[in-house]
Image 1 (cartoon, rainbow, N blue to C red):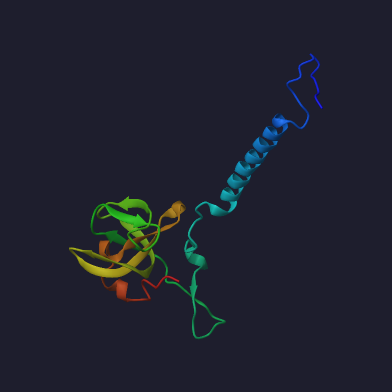
Image 2: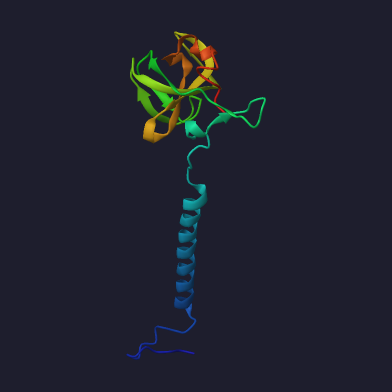
Length: 160
């Protein structure tokens, strides 16, 4: 069953190969759009769950009706230049920024992470530092001069 266009051309057939090609192209287009939408909603990189406001972070106490808050963030100096601030407490995570020697950082808390060794020693303690409007990041405690505060949970608490 051939149909012709208004000029009498018989190249177009109802339900012929051109009709199937259009269906296939539309299905491919829908699949690409669907995948892009799925990626945007589900598969793309999301911010880590550990990014919280310091005010909302609490630790459990003996009395659950009176939750204790973390000690307020404190300022400390970076002891070595070119120190990487990372997305998580490990050297294989994304570098968010680098810190210069003697720069002041705001330490929110400490957390155990990957072991790091340098000329200053070795530790698995990392510090969560406040990056202002950019959230938080982690730096090995080897590179920040916290003195004895690193051992005092009333000064630098353990991250929750």
